[in-house]
Image (spheres, rainbow, N blue to C red):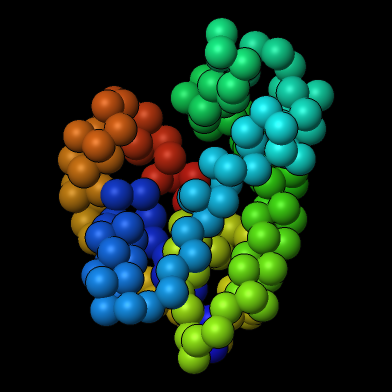
Length: 158
């Protein structure tokens, strides 16, 4: 059984996943997968550079995730272009990991579940929901970004 754990930015998905992990539940975190597949030697890296240009690369040769984030949240068409690159690769990795597991169920932490259109691929969905004010305060503190930027992100999530 696969359970999708979803919710908006700053809702507490990671905290809930950590609690389940402490109880022995297998956790697949799509944020971790997303970071792994954009490393310089991984499949999404070159596609992102081709699509968005070298301005999204840091001096150390890695993807500048903050610059890319600022870029895509200011242009929805760019956000969709990035999702078209990442989502198939992320779901391919999810499927591979699930196939290799030897357990009764696992939880897949997937912030953009609704946006991917893949909610029907999971047996259950667990939604973590908090007030917008809580989302903003948590995210500002955690990510060191402005409340305005958090609002942009929230408004781009289902």
